[in-house]
Image (cartoon, rainbow, N blue to C red):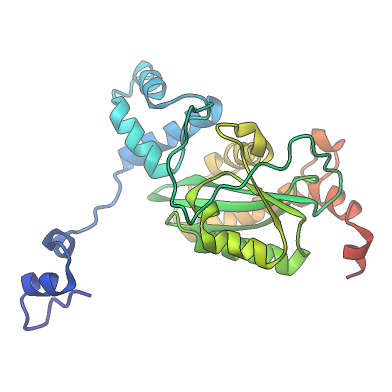
Length: 276
């Protein structure tokens, strides 16, 4: 919006556009290698101890030779989109237009494919920066149906992945997420409603309500991400594409009687879906 070559001074352009001058002069600075390394270590600690909040992680980092305060750890956790998992007395206030839906999976027997899908977002470190990964999985088979990468925590890349899964595999009866702002937005919930999908969201502070996605993140990071220092987004996309193909097609799961997600997913599709 600001045209630095225009005859009108930048100060006046900011006044017309009702922008602070600091916005016009701000120059983004890349994240330093030391900070990226620290963010990765915080992510590793979060996977190992998901209940740990900023104060605990700060103490653990100090004991490992990383003198960092809890406020800096808290800032990094917010930037990465992660937080300690524990029962909270009250969740943050949301916009009235973005309601939180009740959890519908408790005491529900899920044995067939496309009965329940689940989704979440996680942080993926790279050599120079980081990206966010969204994935949608089938609850019964643990199969990754679709995924997307993005350098911002927006709603559009989540919707793209969900729409891709619907176009390819049909619609589930229920779609479960956490009550994050990307998933409570009218755009995201509207997409699900347009396809006649029931919306379910995790209970307050109950991380176990979406535990299969949490387990997927741990597998992805320890079996792929932490073993490969992605140099750029294209490297991350290529590596994850290879890993998810392995995860779906060749990686046996103990919880699935040593079958692969592909085997369980396609063996348990409703007859109507198989003939469609």
